[in-house]
Length: 417
Image (cartoon, rainbow, N blue to C red; front, side, top):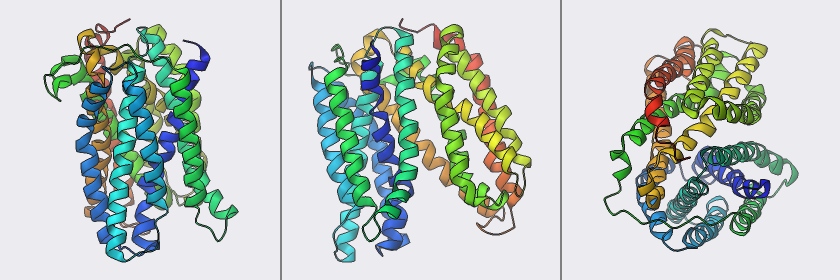
């Protein structure tokens, strides 16, 4: 593929990440506090919509498979999902004045539309990349481009709301953000449809939504993806608590997060080269071990350890590049030729796992910390916070690395080069 085609594919990763982060981080405060909906009702709506979002992913994957039977089916699905996402996103972050019960209905409906459109577009996007080339290393390059731009989207989503609040005082920061997001998303989808080759249509299997899990290599990879994702999700859920209460460096949170993500983006070409030389599975195992070696030191840090934690962010961020680029690339490799018409179903389950571990990390980590005596802003339970933040993810990563090395050959032998 040409560099322009890779750019056309990868660019969409940025607005997809720009859409996701504010929904997770900002909607609870926006509706629960600023708009007066209340934390209990806001939390209930978020929980119900998130459950629906997670459970519908295999069905959206099946929809993508049905659409790919037509030459331009995925293009039509991507365009429709993008249009719905733009409108729903503007509605979610810019609601009109209304009664509380009306606001609750508005919030729930807009949230479901945003989740559904984002999931439909994302699953189609992943499946399209997996079918874009018969060359394994080319598919890995496409994943690297996608994830690299995704990190750019995370950084933009972190900075732009703060900047817009400063630049447009008196106006909701979400109005300009929604506009920038809409323009970026539509530009990226337009470039994808114009420059990126349409995939070849494949016969569709009709043997159920869970057919991918009957394939032993994919089942093993899904287990690894779940373990690795759980480790990352636990650390991500607790990172701001750790920075504020263990390190006492809350003012530097943005610096730490930016260091982590920029390091991850810069490391992508290195992991790409290593995977081409040593294989994706072995390279991912090495990246997992690098993450453990770099991150485990966070267990014993204390107040004002700024430089040591910056070094941890650099090293664990560098390992992030392997986590971003290689699992999805391996997934694209091990889909059997006879299942190429069901690629959307594979990535529907992939998306379900990805969302499930985020919910599991919050559902397990936060109550466990509370039970061990930790309260945000207090001095109790800080050792427990450090151990759960860094120690438990490292143990899970070690288990994942051991299984990855054990299953390495079964993942590599199915590569469709």
